[in-house]
Length: 90
Image (tube, rainbow, N blue to C red; front, side):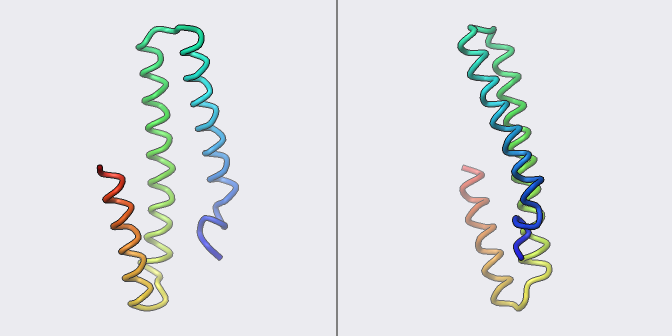
């Protein structure tokens, strides 16, 4: 069973909070709130998304790299992480 399946409830809860944060930004824009408030909301979203990404990445490393079934599976997992990091760091 995949680590995302095992952690599904917790991960989905984090996504729900992110959706709520995005909606708060939309409401703030609609209400013409000061840009400082909007920037703070956006910074919170970025932090929450980074935390979620870190959690999934950590679980991926532990399950698919550290506990890989064999060297081929480990190499594939490392390649997946490498591709994600290249995209993330752009």
